[in-house]
Length: 198
Image: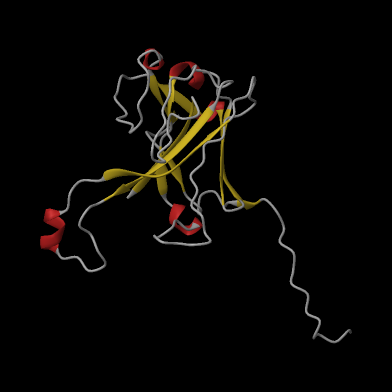
């Protein structure tokens, strides 16, 4: 149904590998960076589903499907937020580039960092999908609870959550008909040694 992914300071904050050796870390991106990703899943749905089955389906649940941690940086020019699945062994359905067409999204971010954003760049599978400049979005400071499946320290939550919204809509949309993705590299052609020289 949907995906949720993000980055934060404190490298172990979003780790899900057991045992989770969570320890108190000094807040601040220069001390560490943590990343996590979750998927919205509906319990009780399989390939063949009837109307009766739909009535018994539970609401979406967040399931953590990945996490990582990295060393911090004294200064950062940009922050990378990534959702990724390994393609070598696919035990579950994975998103394709075409699945993103007509998707909607909205960034949640802490207020002090939101005021520093100058642009948002979105990439997928070697394509650039969107570039949103500062003039194309607004900061929605309306009070809300994002219900994120992450534990934050009390001091971290003193900087309130805000939402980044487009100027003329409530959420962002990825529409390949309206804006065609641009490929970031030109693939090399396969050589055909069987073709006679002309």
